[in-house]
Image 1 (cartoon, rainbow, N blue to C red):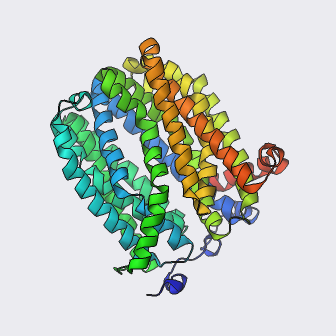
Image 2: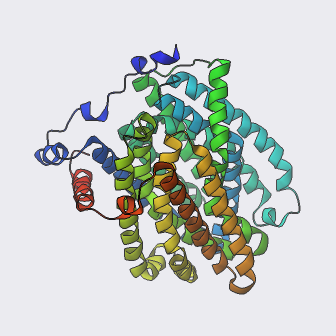
Image 3: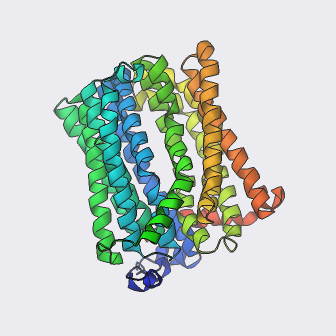
Length: 466
């Protein structure tokens, strides 16, 4: 199949042409909202559902594993997840970009990215096995069998991510929503069966996560095959090089993005005990999940920027103001009730994690704005800016942790997250203004239609249409 024939062989219909529900309320809401707002509402509703399942899963892990077991689970998952991202060389992002831009067809993009991720994941898992049995302090924080089980995540995460990004790039948001919700349900059900019923502890929790990724991969490939004409088609050498090259340019950003929320786990894995790791892991997981709104908007914004970066400038500014304001409101509301919520959701043993939530709060708001800038730079074929920003934030994060740990202990890693996320956001904002020439006022000053956009998007999210 020739690259220029990509869009002619796909069966995906634009979102605005999909069948509408007969609900009067839905028709009323949908008739006054742009397709972009409807897509944001759909992705937001999905992420909200995933967040709900995630909270249930975190609650189960907290009650069943307690802080020490939660710490063991955290170091194993951090090890498997980061290794999976490093070994994939961000080929998934390269495949998504060229498929969305219409320069290489879907089948070839997915085949190239999957091959890179699969081979890299297997090689990395084999190469990392000796580390598990070494005397490094990090690998003493959990049983070696648990670390070995986590190695199954390495190729699985990278390959499933390839299919997920293609669905998002093709704006298949409705089926992707169902797949992500099914994945989250599978993980929670797996924890209930393996950890609660059969008392498999940390290993059971890891197996539940593996099952979730397997379900996501199978369902994603099935939908791409059925609705988008996916088939096995090898890319030519030049197409492979373009996908591989884009991935390498974005890879530092992707690796930094994966390490950044887990850097505290790695630092504590070398310096602290399992209980401290468990407290921080639970607190950071809950706070970072409040970023599901900016990530929802960024998912929808990316294909629009990739199509025409100049025409999407207004949408970038609109999205930035919306997500920063909404995320700040959500963070403030959560902090007001966080202590009783932690007591109920995670048990009394995790109450010492409450101060960590307050420390991380400003960083979460900075993270919201960063997501929008990342969507713009990756969509406009400038992923190197994201790489620089991610690693600048990561260095600031690690430096803060190491500098403050002797005095503040586990609180230092929470400060590290806030300092790192703030540094990344400031750099991305500076580069955005430099690249576009937009004034601070035109980008950041709230406008009346921001509130209108938010309200109508919520109407769609709550209507029976979705």
